[in-house]
Structure formats: structure tokens, C-alpha cells
Length: 461
Image (cartoon, rainbow, N blue to C red):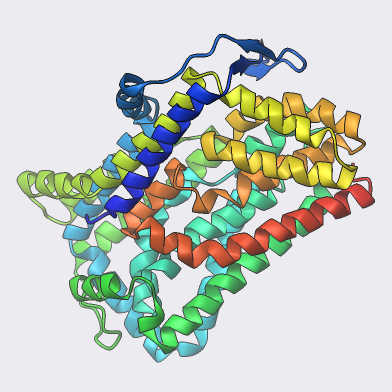
């Protein structure tokens, strides 16, 4: 996989910059306590501590620690990449894409529903049960589907990834963001549902409209796609031409049936048993092996295919490890809590509307370092909830600021394991993705500011 070296260089430059910061500012930390099995910061417990500057040795060790801390998502990517390569080498994906292209070529009136319907389904998943990591495997399904319909890889990536992200930010019932944040803020679980439902509709419509606009432009002129050259190679490998009917064998049908059953089992496992990365990875390892046998691959062929697919994830694994190193340096240097303390000080000294908006900006900055929704809630909400009382905004508005800061910005962050994992699977360089998404991010930034002002004006409860 050709993954841009510039992204890796940029991430490591941030590691060095954060390490330099530990030499400039004094250290500080909040006390922590365990409440209901969750480690939370204690409001009002901030104190300066002995500075712990991070030198060359720490900068070199941090990526190793980052790999260890991010081992689950890195292993997950290796397994997903390997399993999908086994399935791809059975030929089932290629012929199914050809068949889909032929079907849609004969029924073009159905194509206009492809993006809005599928993205809305993923958005519901993000809003209701916090679909994020579990959307990652679908990227490798929707890219060839999008290509078969004349779209590009960015469209195929956006359908599951940005669809889930729209719902994750809307967070109607998301247990990993709103659920935990409201619990910490001592609010009734899932209170304020009606306003969040409106936000979810706005988030989903905006995200779908942006992707549809891009897809329409690309279908009219494929060269407008930032990944045009990459897609030309992909089309050749998948033999996508949209005119020839596919020749399905029983082996192809059996592979697709097993894969479809696995997708249904994935959704059931997440909803019924709370499956996460380990369980989802195990499921795909199993379905990869089963599909290999169904596709009549020999054991040696399956092993080589799996290794080839896992090898394609090495570039993104390096980036994820280095991205996690930023948090390692910030924690070891005792400056993460310093940033939270000083940012909360800014919130406390402005008009309530600006305070709500400053909370959102604060959550965006903290999210650059902490990407777990539950982890960010545990770090910030014990500080932001009582601070909301002091500055004259409701705690529900403080939760909303967290929801926006943890949701809409995630798909563009190079330090997010999920974002970089998705782009690694899609083989889309982060710089191209960033430039493509920047207008949408600017739009959502101002939408968040407006919605927070509205929340204050209506005394959102």
C-alpha cells in the first residue's frame, strides 16, 4: 500500500512539538477518582506539579508506547485487511460488483437512492448505538460498489464512514458520548432527546448532501476526483466496466452468502452483546477463513492472501502508533491537564453564549489528543458540568458542546485511529482527504456555534 509519507512525518513532527512544549510550560494535574468503575477527574483538584520535560529518549520511546496502547485497533486492521484480501482473491467481490454495475446500468432510476439511503442507515447506527469502529469493515465493501456506479473511492469511503459520523455527532441515544457525558453531569439519561433529534436530522442531511454533490460532480467528470489515478487502477483490478453481466458460480454465491451472514451477525453482536474491536476482528478472521474454503482456495493461497492484505495495513499502523505517541508525551510530560485547566479558565470568563462555544472549541482541542468518546467524557465533563453552572448555561448545553467537539471533527483528525484506519483501508492519503473535507468541517464548525447559541437562548434542558 502506498501511504503518504508526509502524513507520518507530520504526525511525528507534532510528537516533537508536544515534547518541546513540556520544556516550556510547568506541569499540572487533576486528582482522579474511580466512580462506578470509571476513572474521573476531580473538579477543583488541579495543582501544579514538578515539570517532567520529555527529551530525545522520550520522543523515541513514545511511538513504541503508542503502538502498545493502540495494539487492539492495529491488530484489528491487520485482521480486517487480511480477511478481506482472502475474500477478494476468491473472485466473489469482483463478479458481484460486475453484476451490480450491470443491474444499475439497466435500471438507472434506482441510482439516485444509493447514497442517501445507505448513508442514512449508517447514520442511524452512529446515533443510536455509537457506530464508529464497527463501520470500518464496510469501507472495503462500499468502495467497489461506488466505483461500479460511476462514483469514486472517496464516495465509497464516505457512505459508511461519514454516514456513521453524522449520526455519532447527532448522538440521539449514543451510549458512548451522550450517555456517559449525561451520567457524569448528573442529568437524566438521554434527556434533551427532542433537540438532539433535530440536530441528527441536520447533521445527516448536511453530510448526505455534501457526498451527493461530490458524487454527482465525479460521475459527470471523473477527473475531478482527488483519487482519480487510484481509482483507475482499482477499476482495472476489479474489471469494472458497467456493461458486462457477471458470471456467478456456486462458489461465488456461497462466499457472498457467508459474508452477508457475517454482516448481519456483526450488527446483532454489537447491539445485543456490545461487541467491540476484539470480537469484530475475531468474526472477520472466521469469515475470512470460511470464505477461503468456500471459494476453493488452498491453505497456502489463503495464508499468502492474508499476509498480503495485512501487509497493506502497515503504513496506517505506523501512523496510528505515532498519533497515539502524542497523547503519551502529553500525559508523561504532565501537560494534558494543564491544557484542560487553562482552557476551562477561558470558558469561565466570557458571556454565557461564548462560554458554550468556548467549551466546544475546548472539546475539539482535547479531542486531538483523546479520541475515545468515553475517555474524553471522563476527562472533561467533571470539569465542564460544574463550570456550566458557574457561567450560567445548562449542563445539557455543556454535554452538547462535548457532543459536537467529539463528533463532527473526528473524521478529519490525523491523530484518530479510526480515521486513519479507514483511510488506510481505502488507500486514500490523509492530505487529499483533508483538502476534500475542509469545506464541510468549516461548515459544521459554524453550525455548532449557532446551535450552541440557540441552546443557551432556549435554556436547553
